[in-house]
Length: 114
Image 1 (tube, one colour):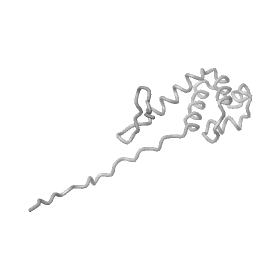
Image 2 (cartoon, one colour):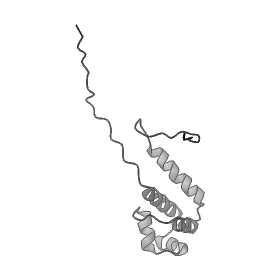
Image 3 (tube, helix red, strand yellow):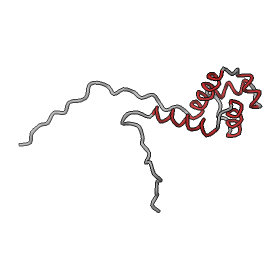
Image 4 (cartoon, one colour):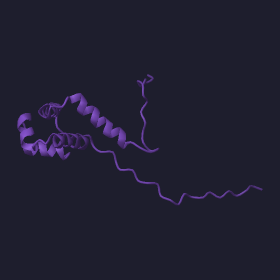
């Protein structure tokens, strides 16, 4: 006769992970943090970048998806190297990915079979 096995359910709920931020939100936080660290005013940075203060504010709040030209202009207005800005944002995404549910990408190139 077969044995009956009892499976105990884990009664403690797994912690919910905060959803990964959108690219525009991470970019905006990074730009605002850089401006704040420098003590720069939004209107001054916007003027140097050649955009309106309202548009820069929306970028910083993650409301707008700026073009690569706009990102470059704002980074230049802040005196930040574009590559350093992108590396910092990538680091924010890496720190956000934690736990077993996180998708890990291979370190090397991915080869696809035809």
